[in-house]
Image 1: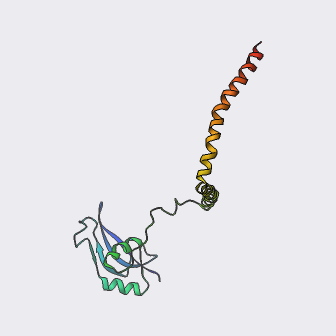
Image 2: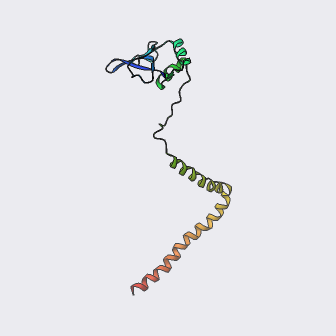
Image 3: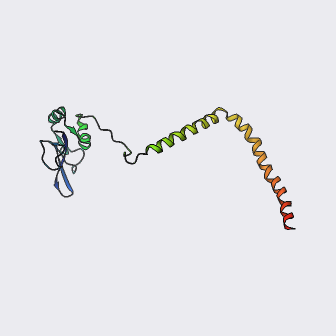
Length: 157
């Protein structure tokens, strides 16, 4: 018999009120439960003491018996120090990148890393080699234009 400490909804439409109950994992949300151990009213202010009313001794007892709180309940009762605060990821598991994408990104990072290391090792050498190359680039198009112009005139005649 797997036990859960979870919320059971009550209250009117658009005015929820929850009981914190210990129930079997297979029972319905608002169905049969073993024991009511508290209540949670999300409609009152955060600083109001009636927002979360819980019997801490009973929570400790049921946790010692193997009852596991749901994510929402563990978040609520962690404020009282009864359980550790749950880890909630920023990115849902469904939208996390797949295995192949992670492998491709790892390969790209490996190929980029040596190129970046080479740039950091010899920045002065690149500066020396870039200056003459830039001068050659500016002279080369002018020479090409001179050589192309007579060729075009020959084709027209």
